[in-house]
Image (cartoon, rainbow, N blue to C red; front, side):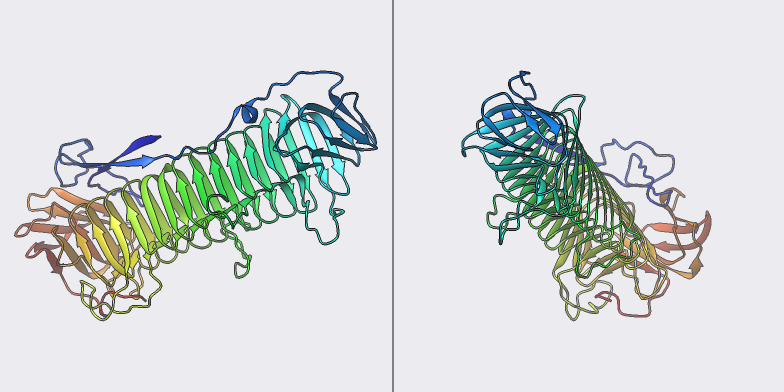
Length: 582
């Protein structure tokens, strides 16, 4: 399946702290111009292939069953009654040995349902209002089957509880969950399921785990839901309170497995470690996800030996749609390889990095609001093609790092002694950064062909609104960067679009409005400062060599200049060589 994300690359006017945008019929920016669909806007289309996702067959989704007195399993406190065929009762334990439908109702004080079929047989277990406690192992235990389907009967509440100890065979470490299956497990139906996992894990399967529907609440000492090969969530409501990870996969041997697909439903996770921990690929195409990990962004819990991330995967994380809210002690979204955001609404508060990938981050569309973080976006390669990205960071807003320690690139263009290989590419989107450290810090080079970038940078002179040690080549889009003057950098002279760096003779106040006007008094740029600033960098198609411009603060002229070259400097400032890692 494919759809096209249309990205309008337009010039904006920022009149609020975290971006309010408007444009006019040309490339200039004015408060009165509100038309964003004009012939001068650049329109690019990105084809995004949505993966087919998990395959659900009729057995996975069919919740119908035939009620029969002979086929109903009655739980009677300390005993079990069953008049049908295909199952054996021994005291308070029933073992299902034949495929088919089995309806279960009643309460079991200390007992167990065991499923033991051949590898090509399926069983549907209809929970019709059960309360099962098992003091020696899982409440439901599939020893062998092709698939176990647990159907939550409409209008019922079903409670499963295990104890803090399991009677395991010598040398064994499982079964270690309240619901444990050695084979595929599907949960469907519109009823409710409460899982109290006092030993270790809530729901665990050695193969595929599918959640089709249901209102499921899991409280677990360790992990909430574990699927060795895959975990898939199609719908329903999941409420997971886990001492360790919320949802995880564990198959590290097969690179085609160990993945997770979330395609809908509502998933709420409160966990001590990672919200979602996936061995290979995590794909989110829809749904509502709310994660609090490690007691949240204000927690003092250590992350030295424990991972307390929101979403984590080894190979890739892909978001296409849905609403995601993460409050994490550790990184909010973390991947060893690639993170791609193609849509959705993501809100992040974290005590560490917001979105971090070792190899690459690609943002094509979506609303990404980072309310709190140490660093906002961090990767070796960062590509921004679209979307609305708002970052508030206590250190760097956007950090491109390749692991090297290059220093002092030299001059306003960077270059010089040694430069890193990290790359930030901006082709579209609305990007707003409010950072206490460097606004944009790239251990390498920046390429901008479009998009609108607003940087509300640092007040300290040991950081800069823009910091790169290679080159910053601009051929389109808009840049406004306010910050300190000590390490200020502007665009490279190899750019084809004009830029200007303005040094102020005095520090400009927080909340003051910085404006740039053309010779006729038309407003090109207007930005309300989030903090004090001593320098401003502007790049816009409205800047033309040979033309005159006026610099206003709070509608009072503080300077004027002629754009004498592609990269013009107004005033003087900066006490160190720009560029490099600091």
